[in-house]
Image (cartoon, rainbow, N blue to C red; front, side, top):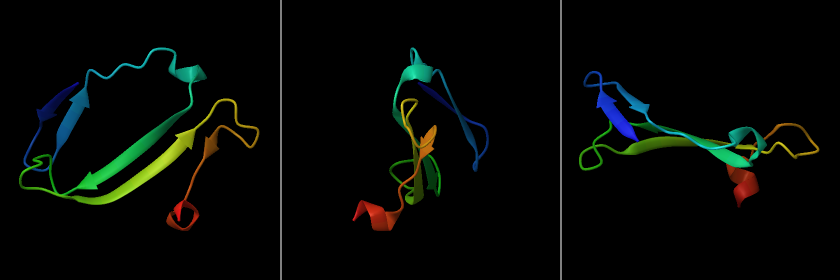
Length: 69
């Protein structure tokens, strides 16, 4: 994985590859942070979506904070 700083407020992530992703169950995370520096910045929000190609209720499932306990 490679992270390139574009500016003080933006960065790009590249070089991530997952073999046979279409047939796998996985979770996609969206992390909002004050910046990319783990020593100075912090996470402000986290979102997640569970993608399951074998799900009988559809291709996507979500879970909110109340369902997580």
